[in-house]
Length: 405
Image (tube, rainbow, N blue to C red; front, side, top):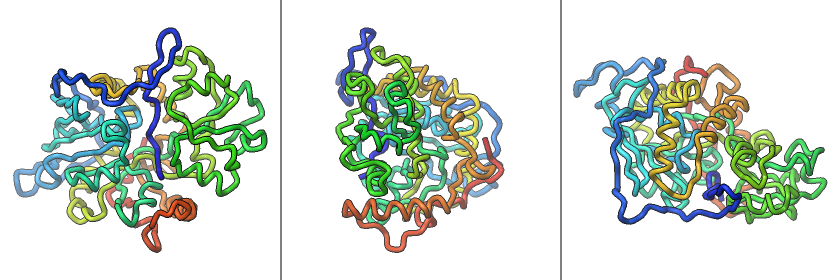
């Protein structure tokens, strides 16, 4: 049921024509991969202390012999700023496989080689719009995947995962509307009284929650959203629709020529549905095997997120290069990437949460989400783990509490 990152496979022409781009648009005659000397990681200072010496020649700062030779990460969508902290760890001399939508290279900690490799795989169209959880259980080469907390709840029985690092403190998903058409609407709940149609991708768990709790009426929900702005524009803003705070407000004002003005919105998070958005999770069965690795890797991931948010330009160059080479129909500009970083900072999408630590999980918040999610998923017939608890799906064991934004 969970669908998070299915969005904007579209192009906007100079004349304002809109169309849904085809997925997987690589020409069959193109070279499968390319290698570049540029690196994706900045050289900001690291807060991670590194490993102790061990067998196999492991030195301070090295993950060799403790972690797998390659840490493979399955993302939930095409490369974008929300994934910036992961791409921050891709070092110089990386290789791009444009056919498989994979970038791989040295895994770096503040620019320093850790002795192992990192492989980052695109999601969304690159994997046939499957969930990262499903992909992880089909391909055991994947070390970590972007598994939203509500997705982890939904799959807790059949495909259990446990999150080790939450790079985003809030989900950037929004419901947006035209402030000129609805000047009195300030929240998602305010859309209920005027009966505004709300378009979304079918299968969104948060929308079932809104309907079950009366935040919105079921008869005003429209699951026909296809990722393009065409209907919103043609309806002159009389409808509301889902989007992402980190993208749509910029895109609609600056890149959708037939709109070219502000939209108003509220985060789904602030309306009460509060999963962690795309945290890094492992298969639960791998916990004992990977725990020594995670003690070293998670602080590196924490610091990489801090470094990216503070100095995103170099890694954004890598992200834009990947978008161009993958050629899935995903439209992503430098302007959107820059806006996204600033918006994530301004809205607390990336932040320290309720304490002074980046990347940890608030277990009370997870417990509350579990309580809200049970009736949502029971309504779909999903079988959840019996007596599910926060510690079944998240852990702060590997978090370095001194690392903060």
